[in-house]
Figure 1 (cartoon, one colour):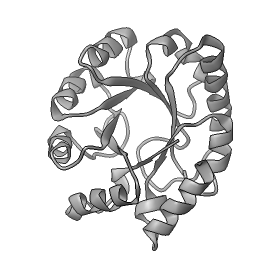
Figure 2: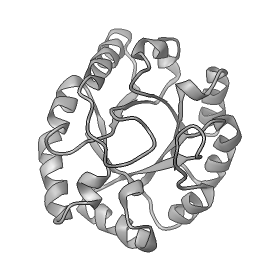
Figure 3: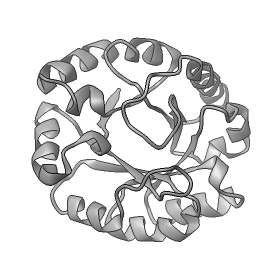
Figure 4: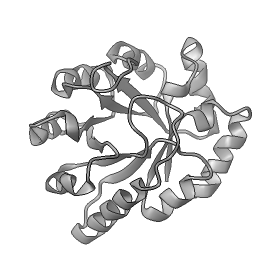
Length: 216
């Protein structure tokens, strides 16, 4: 089980310190929310920041592209040093082409789906995926409440993974904390993106330990 702290909730004025703090807790993944102001109504991190982070950490950089034309941006983030690149199913038409672009570079490829998108739409691509990211909030902003209906998608993905003998990781993002994570784990989640639950906590180490205990 993996906790991937979301840097969207970190203090950008001291980003290296924020990364070092969560790595001190035991983080080996860092979740990078990339928003373009078009696919979602917010604007966040670009490849220049990812490149800067890359030189400061050995953690897996898990880049979630919430962007309108991911085919244009994927090469930028590959060059910047992303380890995992996830794009939205709703944003593309040539899914296999983008998966090949990422995987042929030696990096891991993922697809994310919004709350309104049925998980079954991913079925044609499951054998080519390293990761599936289920959004348990509407993408675009941190600090939203968890949507419990997202667990049905996780359960379906977990069943498909077992039935077909596949190895993709199931990740969830949105409203994850020590309360919601237990149901996510039971449904089949393996990577837990946590932003405000960690970076917004008064006692971050305690928040990390509580979340870790729930998913372990």
